[in-house]
Image 1 (tube, rainbow, N blue to C red):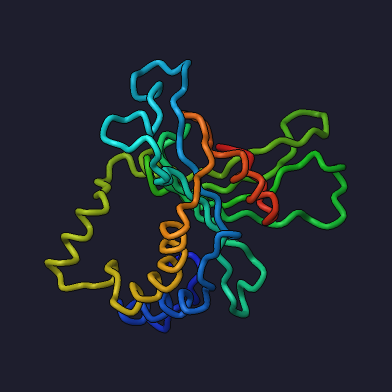
Image 2 (cartoon, one colour):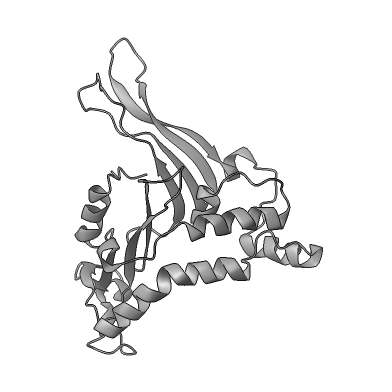
Length: 241
């Protein structure tokens, strides 16, 4: 998904042209280091309403009590090219979090000379992959009425609302159709895979070799607080929704 968001415009819609641009982006990304990452492992929540919620990762009978296996990871990637130099790309995933979703958040910088005295939130373009495909833009607008109050609102394109009468295939259905049609557009090419390995393999080996201890977080939260601080260090401000 990162390469699709960050790639340059391909010369055509041919699968090879699209995948060429994806590979160019990956070649511009530095390999991850521990300083770029936050690793976490969830603990049971004593207030949880289910047995799973009350059970921490290492309390699972199939898991070793001294396991260092992360159940959460945040990584900050840097793309060294003309367009994205200095722009952090933050990848975040985990188990036992407060929400189950996959999305892309493109956050815009604060406007210089803010006349609203810091009462605004940043504009965001959100691409939600699942659950419920959607594309929406979060922005600050004047609230209705005679006052000059501002509030956050959304320009929302939720597919199941906009295309009620259309069949929306899931990802695997599309891939199977591509196989039958002989299209490789949505598949990973070998050079793309090698570049992804170049970025992630060294840090994975280091984590295993040094037995890096993950930071604990409670079942059902957003993840380790250190992850939010890492986002703030990279000038990303999460406001939810």
